[in-house]
Length: 280
Image (tube, rainbow, N blue to C red):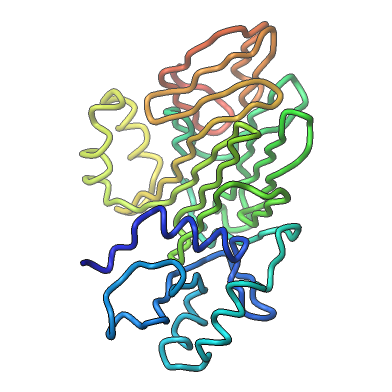
C-alpha cells in the first residue's frame, strides 16, 4: 500500500468536516489527511473511520499527539464548521501579466467578461503593483449567488457535493450535481520554454510569440479555469474551448467582442490582451 489516498476517501473526509479544518476556531479549507486510529506506522491503511481531514498546522500538531484519539473522533462528529457555514479562502498568487486560460481561451491583462450585457461573470483587475487579480461571481439556476471571488479572496455560500482546496494553495475545485455546476481553478508556473512546449500544439506560433513577449523574465504563471455553469445560461469550459447554449443570450468580453442572440456557439480558441481582442 502507498501513501497515496484514494480520491473517494479524500472526498469522504473533506465532506465529513464540511470542507474546513474541524479544530475549534480554525475552519481553514486547505486540508490534508491524517491517519490516527491506528496511525500509519502501526498499520498502513486508508480507512476513513480512522482518518481525519485537517489543515497543515493542525495535522502537524496531530502528528505530535497534541490531540487524543477521542478528541479527533469528536472533531469528526462535531466539526467546527457546520453545513450551513460559508467556506472561504484566498489565492496568494499575485503576478504581473498573469496568463489566464479560461475555457481554452487566453486572457492577459485586465478583462471583463459579461453575460447578458450587465451580468458580470469573470473580471481580471490590476492592483497597485500591476498584479493580476481574479474576480468571479457564479449563481445557481434560480439567480442565487453561490460563489464569489474578489481580488483572489473567495467565498462559497452554498453547500456543495465536493469542495477541494489543496494545502499548496494552487487549486480550488467545487461541484454541485443538483445545481449542475462544477468549477476548477488551478495555478501553475513554467519557464517560457516549458510553457511553449506544453501549449505548442494548442495555439499558433504567433500567439505564443505574443504571450512570451508580454511576460518579463523567464517565468510564466498560468491560471486555468474550466468547468460547467448554468446561469444565466449553460456554459461548458474545458482545455479545448468553450461551448455555449444561450438561447438568445449575449456575451461581451471587454466591450470589444460581443456575441448577440447566442443559441449554440463553440469558441475553440481566442486571444485577448488588455482591452483588445487580437485574434479570435
